[in-house]
Structures are given as structure tokens and as C-alpha cells.
Length: 545
Image (cartoon, rainbow, N blue to C red; front, top):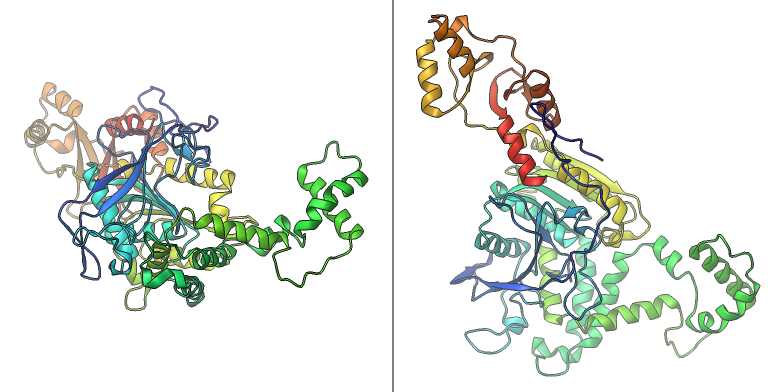
């Protein structure tokens, strides 16, 4: 989706977003903020000297109105884009964050923080309790998604941001997005919730419960007291293996692994490639498919009775589990998955009621093959938002990757996110604080009001608030020169106007076509609710152009 240039008064402006090839943000570093005093959790428990780890990409503009907060998923962290010194692997959402990418760091300032309860710099179970000088372990208080968002709010306020241009995230990050708009509606203009739910289901809770049991049944977990000792790696690895299965789909696993066995791939691939001909012009997937076919047809199945992993999918899951234990804390996994289980935005059993205070404009994205957070759950979010009169758009990514598609489908994600962030409506820039006059008032009154309030346009309204015309400073100047005293004689009654849900391009086009610099915004009953001026559009271009 491409947003056309905004033009007014005959002057050309910049495109609202670029279509240049995206680049990496390059070297980045993490920072941390210590929340002063005592932090009160939803449970009523408190934390002292709570810290939050975060990274910033891009620069804030003068009024800090271009800030986007990125919320990470279950085992993510603050490192969403760019490269840390000495590391070759980029941040976890590198595909959409950076110059000329979906979250364009040449226009927006992107903030991503590690959540409360995490183990990558933010206060969590592995942190030192200032009161005891020892690791919290399971003495760490219970946390919720609401607590995570409250900590993020403290960070945002510390950085001097009064309102976020957008909040975005997938999976548990999407839960945080939803919670932001419920807890702090006045602080969020736009929200992007991807592959998520507003209320954790029994099936989702069940998977979390199995993962936690795998950890707590590991003897090395030792009641959560394993710091400085051997970690419960076996239980944590198993929990990750269980969780990782839910992030994939049957189709993606079939395509990635099929029924290939480890030994067969090593001994059979080389031999079978001799029989593969005509590879020129074929892609890697086609060649791989032919090789797999040759392996299946030419090598007899080998049966193992020692129950060691011999299928590729088994080895893959073992690798994922073992690798996870090197970067994540078992107690953090327990606390965070439990916070996900507790997540439920319904109020009195009604999601509509739960979203009743939301004001943000929404983009809700689901993934066709996601069985962890299926599309119907995203559709329920959109329905509840729409029932509250919220502008909420539903989109579905077609992908075989399953839940993990929000980390992989660069093209579809970029298309949807770019279009949503760049779409500017009249309501985004209109001035709701304006002055009006009635047609029965005098020119002298209108003139004094313009001078006092430093405005050049005054809408003329009826007793019911409906627009009847408009008076400009130029009209009053002509009236004085012609010695006209009654305001009713100089009103322009053929008024051009726009509605608040129309795109800003329409307002700009009307201003240019009719050489006017202010345009009334009206509701369905022709009552004036605001003004759009050329100055407000100029400010918009300066902010995001």
C-alpha cells in the first residue's frame, strides 16, 4: 500500500514513507533504567530498585511524537534489531526494523525493552534481591502482563514521551500491545497486535503447564535455588522443545524435515545426488525434494532400538532445547509462562466491556497456519474493538510457518505495517480546540476574537452546532473597507469540509484546489468537531517526512 504525497498551497511535499531497500540499523548497544523508589505490582507486592533493559533505534523528533514501542514475545529480549559488538546474529526482528524497513528508523524512533521477570537485564528471578543480597529465585513476586506494561510505561515516561505513536508486538508481545491500550489508552495512537489473543485458552494454558512441570520435576531445579550450582538444563530444554512445537505447523515441519533420518541424510545424500540430473534452473527446494525422494526409494529404513534421536525433527528439537538453556533462566520461564496463563482482558466475562476504554487505532494480524493462537482469536479481538466504535482492521498472513511466521514473513509483514503506520486520517491532525461565532454576531466581535485568539478562520455555527459558513480575516478586512457592519453579510456559505475518518490527502487536495488554508471537520449530522489547517499538515510532514 503506497500513500501518495501530501500537497497544499501548490507546494509539493515528501512521501509519507519511502520504498527504498531496507538496511540494517548497524551496531547497537543496550541500556538500562532503574525505576526510583518502590514499584507496586498488580498483586500488591512490591519491588525495590527494579531495572528495565532497553534499546533505542533512530532518533526522537522535537516533540517526541514519532516513538514506537516494540514488545517482545515469550523468550525474547530488548535486542530487536542491529548488531551487538562481537556478535554476528542480529536482533530478533531485524527483518522489519531499520532504515527504510517497515518500522523505518529514518522516520520513527523505535524502543524495545526486556520485560519485567526476564533474564536479559531487566529485574527477574535471577536478579539480586537488594534486601537479602541473594538471587530472588522463587521468592520473586508473581507478575502479570499488566505489570510488564506498567514498567514499560515508567521507561517511556523517563524518556520524556507523553504519547506513543504506536505499540507493536507478536505473540506475548501482542498481549502487551492489547494491555497498553486498555491500561493507558491516552498514551497510544496506533496499535499493532500480531498472532496473539486477548484471553489465554485452556489449551494454551495446558502447554504452559507441561513446560513448567518439566522444569520443576528436574532435580537440579532444587525448588528454584540453583544459582551458582548446576542449572536444571534437562527440564528447561524439554520445556523449550514442547513450546517450540507449538510455534511450528504441520506443513512447515513436513517441508523442513519430512521423515528424513539423520544417518540417511549423511550417508545417502551424496550417493543419491549422483542420480539427480538437470539441476540447472531449479531452485534449492526442488533439488532437495528430488534428493529426498531418491533417499526414500533407494535406502531401506533403519530401525533403532536404543531410542536415540534418529529422525531429523528429533535432532532439531534437541538442538533447540539445548541451545535455549545457554541463554535463558529456568525460573524466568516459569514466571513468564504463568503471566501468560493469567492474561485475560475480558471484564465480567465480556471482551467488549474489557475494551470499552480503548481509543487507539488498531491493526490486528493473524497467521493462517497458527494453531497456538489461531486466526479466530484475532477476529474476536477485532469484533470486540469494532463493537466499541474503534477503528480496527483485521489482516491474515498466508503462511506455512505457523506461529513463528511473525518472525519470518518479511514481505507480508512489511506491506501491512508500512501501510498502517503511514495511513494518516483527518482525525490524526485536526485541532479539536477551536473558536466559533454565530451569524447574528457583529463583525467587531469576530474581529476581536480573531485578534485575541490569534486565529484567521472562524466557523459560523447554528444553535445546534451545525456549520452554516465560515469567516476569514480577509473577509473582515474587506468588510471594514466596504463599511459593512453585519457578520451575516460576509459569511462564506459554500463551505468545503471533510469528515474525521477521511484520509489527510483528501483534506490537502481540497485546500489546494480551492486555495484555502483551513478546513472544517464535521460529523454525520454536519456539526463541526474540529479544524484542519495547512500548518497542521506541514507539521505532519516535518514529523514523518
